[in-house]
Length: 351
Ligand code: TXA
Ligand code: MG
Image (tube, rainbow, N blue to C red; front, side, top):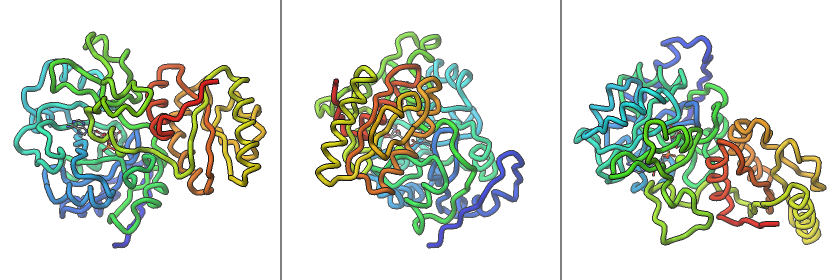
C-alpha cells in the first residue's frame, strides 16, 4: 500500500483538505492525523474490522484498547452508559483537550475497539485538524498513538511515516503536535476515580471536581513491579524504549554531570557510541560530544514537547548508551518522568 502524506495548512483549513481522508475512513481504512498531544492512527470506532486493521498496522496486541475520539460532548451518551455527573463536569472543564475518560461502554461500541473490556476510553481533542476530520467524516475515530507498537509516540508526520509507511493509506501532516505527550487518562468506571496515565493534566487539575482523585499505583511505581497490575492495559507493555540502553541519573546537578561524564568516558573507551539527554540549563556541563538538549527546565512544556523526538533521534544515530538527566520537578514532571522511566526500563542511578 502506498502511503500518501498530505500537508494541511492548519491556519486555513478547507473542507477539500479532508476529502481523501474521509473517503478512506468511510470505507473502513486508516488515516493518521495530528492531535494536540501526539499523532493518532484513526479508523471508524464502530467498525470492528477497522479496529483490527489498527492493531495490525501498529503491531499492537489486540487486548490493548483504543481511545475513541469525538467532536462533540453529546457523543458521550451514545458511546457510554451510567455516566457519572463528574464526567460531564470534567468534559465541560477540560474538553476539547488532552483528557481521556474511561466509562462503561454502550452496546454499539465493538469489543475489538475496547480490547474486550466492558469500558470505553473517550477523548475530544482540541486540535483543529483532528476536530475537522472527525466532523467531516461523521464518525467516531478510534485512534491510538500513530507509532509502531513499543516505539515512542509520534509528534510529527515524519515520525508516522518512519513507523507506518506502507501500512496505512494516508497521513495528514499538520506540523508538530504542541503538547508532545499523550492525554491524561482518568478512569471513572470504578468505585473511585483514578488517573491511569499522567499527561498535560495532572492530579491537582482534577481535585476541584474530584477531590478523591488518585494515581493508579502502577503510574507512580518507580520500578517495573510485576505485582502492580496496570489498569490501562497499554501501560503494562514495554514502551517508548529507544534501541540503545537508557539510564536516568538523579541527584544534584553537578554530581549528575560528574557521574555521567565518568560513565560516558568508560563506555566510549569500550568502543560504544554514547549520548546525553539534558536540559538547556545544564547541557554545557557534559563532556560527551553528543548532547541532546530536550528543552528548558524553566519551561517544562518544552521538555514534554520534544521528549519523544529526542528519543527517536538516538535510534536514527545508532546510539548504544544514553545517559539522561531526571526532570521530575514541576507540574508536568509526573508525566515526563512516567514516559522517561518506562523508556529506561526503570533504570535509575541515584548520585
Ligand atoms: O493523547 C492521546 O491519548 C493519543 C492521541 C492520539 O489521542 N492516543 C493515545 O492512544 O495515546 P494509545 O492507544 O497509544 O494509548 C491509549 C491508552 C493505552 O494505554 C490503553 O491501554 C488505555 O489507553 N486504554 C484505552 N481504553 C481503555 C480502557 N477501556 N480501560 C483502560 N485503559 C484503556
Ligand atoms: Mg501509544
